[in-house]
Image: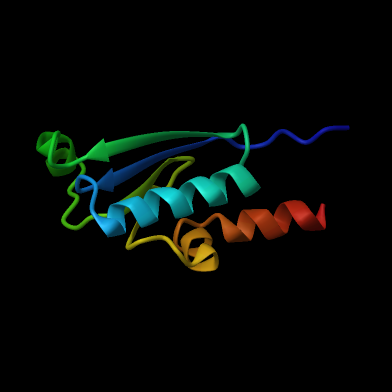
Length: 102
């Protein structure tokens, strides 16, 4: 019997094409394609082009990754190069271990 998998809604706030923004996007894409293929929606928001969106979500630094769904909302700031820290920071690592044990 197949398990129902959660879907994840993520927002990545970046500042243009800076090295940290590019690193964060590449790192996140690698994590998502490796571990969450087909169960996520990612919206990339450039705060230089859409500052109002960053203000609405109270983003004070970039790059910032926000997990919107499933609740609770979690945010992590940085270039996202440490896979384990990203998963722990967004409360995804625990769920990953939980699925492996099942």
